[in-house]
Image: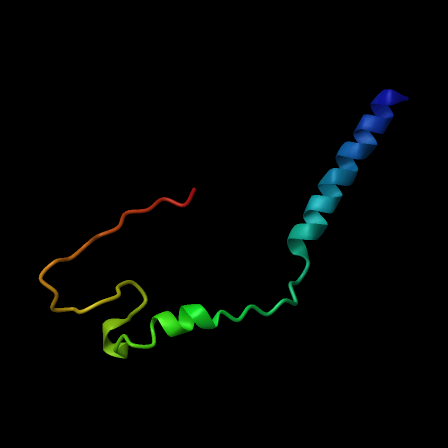
Length: 67
């Protein structure tokens, strides 16, 4: 009986985890502080991979691992 209960709880947890990870999020996040932080930076200085003056005398490269 105990083994069946442990199995049922484990399967229920797996089903709950799958359900939670596949449902659609309806929350809209608006972060005006982040938008305001880049308001004074010219659009020519921003692309998808860099930020700042392209003619700057110092360049910083960031190598990151998000695992």
